[in-house]
Length: 315
Image (cartoon, rainbow, N blue to C red; front, side, top):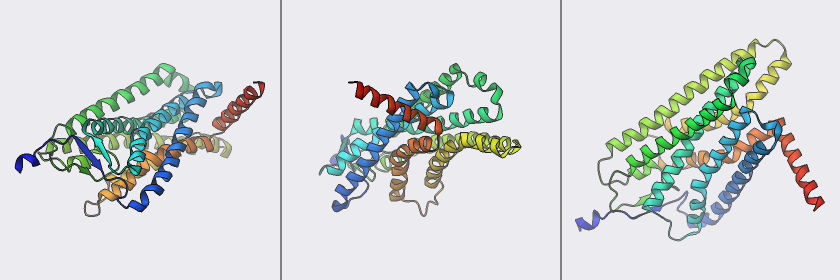
């Protein structure tokens, strides 16, 4: 009997968003719409910032990579989630689970630091406009994006290796809709002190360090805007960073809601709701935030659609 309990796990069962059978089909269509809008919106941002000559500035270069990250983040989670909502057996293989956790960590850490890079870009644009193209040169842009991806990949490999270095035996039911590190470690049949320390230290450092840089950047941006004498100048300066401020507020607000909950009130069901927000809803909202409030993106979209219509008519 004891040997059976110590049999290594070869697959996990994902409980999903809800275990109520009558909600599976409605949830499938809700998340299918969300994922469809996410793919369309982020592919639209990637396409526009790649082909439109007016969007070849550092700000839109970083926005393109944020869209790539958002698309990757939701694609790691949503397809398997949608399949499991319709499946009677909601399983994921051991290595599939490790790959999903690793992919999720790559994109979520990359998003944290891409928002930091974008905050720095807005800080230079508003506080040092004359030096903007020198400080945020194409080489510097490429370096910042490369470092973001390299750091996120290193973090993902380190944390995923730690989470899967422990043993998983008879218990294989994950109380989540994807393979996340906390519910995974709760299933382990061996000592999880080191992996838990790595997971929470990494998350804490990433969140704290990135928030400090973002807050310092926006503190200086607000001071610089307040020093502008004309109301028109202040409004123009504020409009250049309003979209990013909104995206940062939504993203960090969700993460802080998760990590600052008292342990007595903390539950995996609350984590699920917050996870839905930053893995599925925020990637859908970001293209809307950056396009609806941005005249350049709206003009680029109109120009792109006009050219597409003319090409279609000429056929």
